[in-house]
Image (tube, rainbow, N blue to C red; front, top):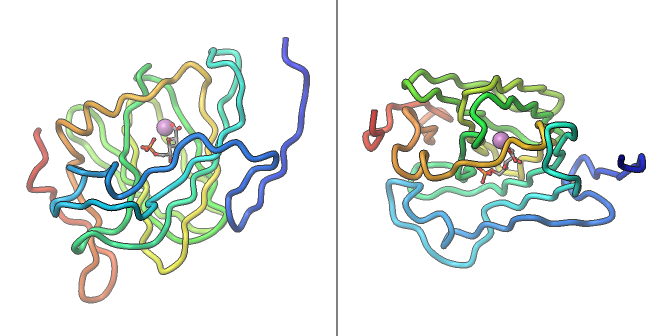
Length: 182
Ligand code: 6PG
Ligand code: NI
């Protein structure tokens, strides 16, 4: 049994003290995610994680700091994944910035929800999820999910999401993804 503990989250930056960064993805790690080629050392997002056992009796909790930027007309976004255990759900709480949460099922349904400070997005089991930063500042959100969920990136790398969020003449637009493998 774990000992109870407390961590402190900086709502503006997403830093969790004591710091425990899990992931830092650069443009060079995002190749293939965008219609346009991308490369280079610019950081797209970072994930800070609270380390607990990956079992179904614990909750994984982490924050994501997704920087602002674009590749072509596509906003900076996370890679996106299904949970390896498909029926595992997740909750996001946005603490800073503005974005869209793109979700999809394996049979091609999709849903888009807004992310803004205070938004609590519920991601039911079976839905893949990707967050997209549509503003000129970092998007920061806290996530909690069942400990044994795991991450399946391969399905998204192969098929993509049914829709993309791109910058249009009057702001963010949702458009069909021409590269989606249905
Ligand atoms: C999770 C969460 C979330 C996500 C990050 C980075 O299941 O861990 O959905 O923490 O991992 O926002 O996104 P990618 O995992 O898709 O790179
Ligand atoms: Ni997830």
